[in-house]
Length: 290
Image 1: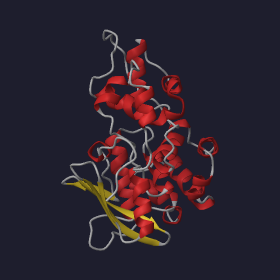
Image 2 (image 1 turned 180 degrees about the vertical axis):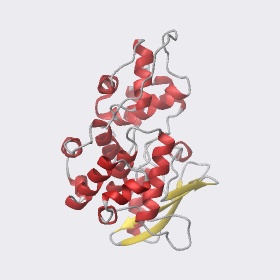
Image 3 (image 1 turned 120 degrees about the vertical axis):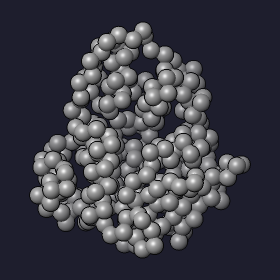
Image 4 (image 1 turned 90 degrees about the vertical axis):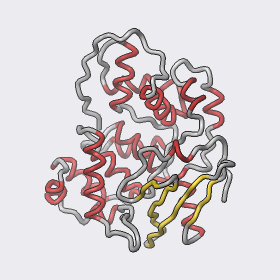
């Protein structure tokens, strides 16, 4: 049992957390973890006094679970600094215990980023689940699969990924990167270096770099530039359709908290907590983020 650093509400962090490697049931998160070549199953739940009950098969598993849950990523300074921010101040007050949940392997975040391009979110997550279930065996005693690695994703032929529903060019990019790079090594790079590496890959861009940095590496400073929800929010604020790249301006004022700010912006937008100009008709074409 541990006390998180700063405000922390597991229920808020776990929203939309379920995928092929983890699920949320009765307030408990159950997830598979990669510990070297070993796969562990771990759980987390929160007590009424705010403590987090962690269960894993080893000390390494507990440490990995802490990373996934962002338990030690104290964002008190973020809440203090932007308490009166006109866009996220109200959201920061109502959802102050919210943090970005992370993914156990960087390869999985790359898959998520690639699946998330050019298609609706629900279909993207469905495609991600399909590929993970084919790439990794189900963990004994559970309905969950192991987190995919570069090795397991590299074994695919691009044509097989195409059969599963992934666009041919993105399938080729995923296989090429996983066959040539140990993505876990991105943990040792600065955020800027890691983001630059992702953006230089064919077919990827700032949005994909944001997904990898925020969810895979746990870097709250890197936001999801070009995210559709941010594009819609910024378009409402400006009364015109904005380009995906313009959302960098929306995140810029939050500096080293840009990634976390993006989470609060999209949450606030979804809950009607952001003051918006009188609604005018704004056509929302689908952005081609990468």
